[in-house]
Length: 99
Image (cartoon, rainbow, N blue to C red; front, side, top):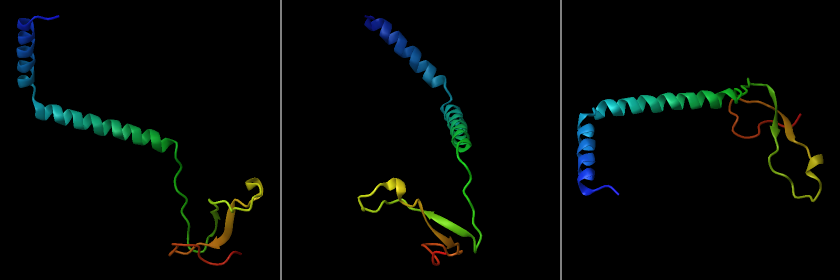
């Protein structure tokens, strides 16, 4: 166990070091380091992702079926997609009729 005198000396040394630090510079370095690390993480994440598919007006598209009907039959044999639909620029819901 450290004596009270030794603790006082250590505390004074810590206070001196804190007063000598330029806190604004330290904050700036921390901010730069955080931004650098976030950019590295974004690049690592983006490497495993592919770019989104873009469609033009009039393209035929299929819509993935994400909910399973409650028929009691095997999902393995259910269709995976619904469609085909013609893509419209105002595509907010299913547009067109299945071809």
